[in-house]
Length: 323
Image 1 (tube, one colour):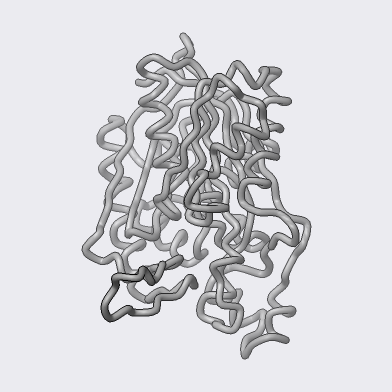
Image 2: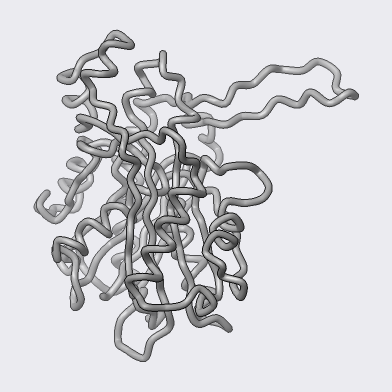
């Protein structure tokens, strides 16, 4: 066990809500069609904020809750597929806004597995020379959405959440993890593609920034590979599926989560869902759910929980934590 404590969690959700009914005025769709296929009723989108703004609010809340000073933080990791810019990285903007002069900062890009990958990197850092860090999943996916494409526009939302974690002598922490990448099927979900327009290029293919996905293949991938990953990580932790109190899965699609629960032989009540009000916020879904469940005392000290992300790359990340 990596003896690491989740000291605090926090989330920042944009105020502007976009309902399925509002989208139906923009494209050929309706609430019943969207909800029956995804479990989503609404999502939140930014009006003036960017990704770093949401992430900074999360970091500020984490310091307030934990009563730490910004200079007590050794590192800040931000998992995102929708950064403010390629440089400076989003984490550096958070570090500056927080005034965390002693912390180094970097972004991680693993799409919907990003937060779990970030937690893996953070636990490795804490296992060596560092004492305390912040891990945030933050997305403004609304800038990557083609709002005329009903196959993708109905799915995504904006938001951020994260945790402050530190070394501890308590018998808590990361029990096991299993991270997988499936780069051979990278074309099933893509976004943010750049075109090379340098003065020396020959024939240039224009690329676009918007989401494109093969929904059927992504669904089949998730329902097949996520249970396999969970089976492996449970074996590494020397646990059974019954030993996990709560499964916090990436909130992409309600039907995917129900299928995974069935494959594991677990009651769906152990798989809380909140995509009905947030949609898919990629790297932010797992920490948003974690913070909500902590606030409601559904997730609390003494429990064993699973954190699971899956999506673009394609990637899967699963961890088992003792709280």
